Length: 78
Image (tube, rainbow, N blue to C red; front, top):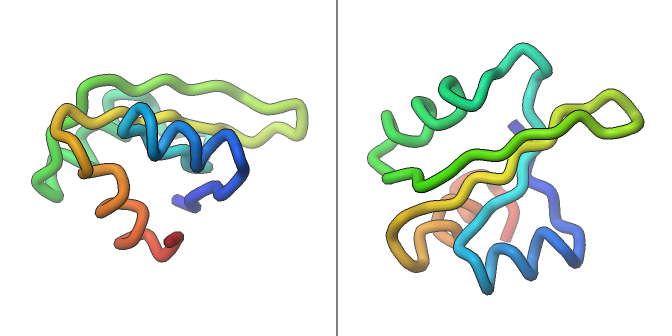
């Protein structure tokens, strides 16, 4: 998993408690959610899409405030 640090990704992080990550194409929404819940974070919602370049992007929104920033720091992004 790789954290994206675009303007949109940072805005989502700040305003909506959501991280944006690139994941392998075989990962499902439930697999992504399970990954973060095993680490002790409560996930509210996971959205995925395939980019034009063929990469899979996931938007992971957390239930508790401020968790997205903590997760981003753990993934080595901020």
